[in-house]
Image (cartoon, rainbow, N blue to C red; front, side):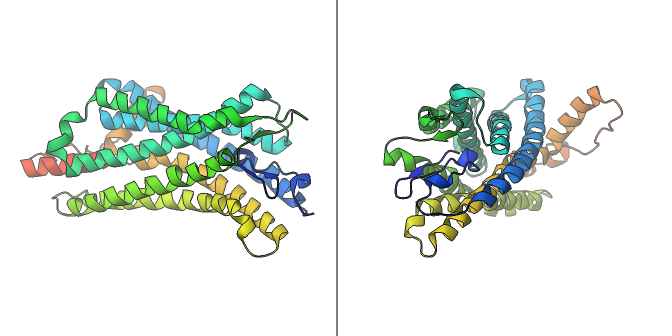
Length: 356
């Protein structure tokens, strides 16, 4: 995600390429050479790993859902778009990996804008679809009979379009203000003229990327868990553990990065040696950013591969390509054993909302 320019210290921050450091931009002499060397090795390695794992995991989710599109429901539509947004996100990482390695942007101004904007759009879209899936689960479990009729495929398509448009709207300043440095043509960075736009991305990243989705998860799941604990299902404890994992993993992966971004905005007011503070914050953003990006590799596991039905579909498709892969004999959570009464059917519906 692209950053801002601190007018007090004239230091350009580019969070999608934070490894781009220039001592001339620092107000006081401060040796940052070791950060260059660290980023040159650390970021390409992490970005490459995230790209490979994220592409395989999310690509597999997209492949399975496309193959079984005739059985699509609202949950599948959200899951498809979540994987698609994560794919868009990881597809930008090879560009930033190369940029961090050679410290020179060679792909031109158009790709600079497109890559940075797509990176931001993929991030926000992924976050928003996690929010949508959380609210959808809340509706299914808490307001089933009142709102179930609105969970149609048409509603899913309309909702998906709205989420993508919102993500593009939030990321529009990145498309507009990110460009290649005209003087040397070697840097790709976010450099608006207005101070408001300079700080825009940090506030949107903190509010829309962390605080809002985290609050939605906490509020919705705190209502869902008591309902789950009262149903008659052998799967309820597994579902509760999954819910807790979703919330905790999201917070652990994204909170350190957003806190680091916020501290860079407030660094002029922080006590201590400015050079040491500068080094610490830059290193913190570099490490926490790379750590946060790995979250897109976990989304397929948390939202898709935990389901027996989904895994059965995966094995069926893989078996067509690799015949010797054994088929799973585990039963679906929608198995008839959960449908012996209306109460048990309700329990099956609730649990299958989380692990299909």
